Image (tube, rainbow, N blue to C red; front, top):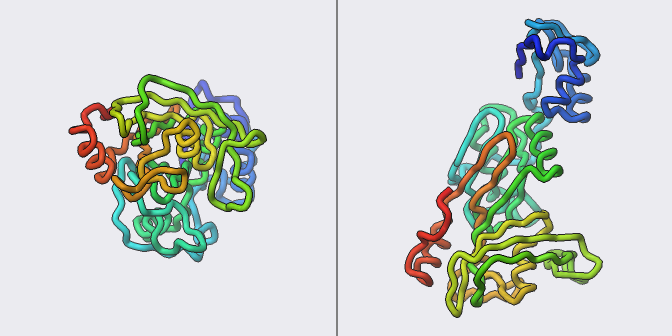
Length: 296
């Protein structure tokens, strides 16, 4: 990564300049250890160096073989790329594909698919958000250490906004807020529930269409608890269609009817993932069409 210093940036120490551009303390620490981690005009420099107008500041933020997970196998799996540049890759993840590898999921994940896509260079999988295996939609990944730090900071500071489309059971209209703490249920490693001493969780929703059996809602989680939308909708008596873990029926669809439609990252952009085919077909079957779903 290269910066050409201008008059407005002149006089700043490298460490202050980099912190103002999203470099975390841990990333600066890593760069300082590399012989070519931080250079000015081709020469290695300390982070206390004072920048001058015209200086060329270069940073080695690329991954090496040492950074890679040696156990992550590149696998040629079909994925839909929404946006891609040297810093980030945005994917419309299909349902049925886990985001990360785990004990029971090897070789079938988004991590494997992207490791294959970038197989010609050292690659580290860094997902900003993690969707459940059977939730489809937008996943943002960082392609280098800098953007991993930047995206992590934006999440922590509330500068990432996510919108989901969910098909829920029962008739629900209007707007609403669900504010109920969530924690893992005793004797379960997977299932969550609303619990008095759980972690704070807040979800907003807007009903887009409803009949006596089903409703389609646009959901915005304001916190990021595991299974938050699924737990909160079940808590108010409207489990997601297909979500048998939380009381939904799989009569109409064989997975939870939940799709991450859009993610907005302040200062970077908004990214939209068209509805997964099975959810589109479900909504058409129940309501005749899906034209009421936001298109961007």
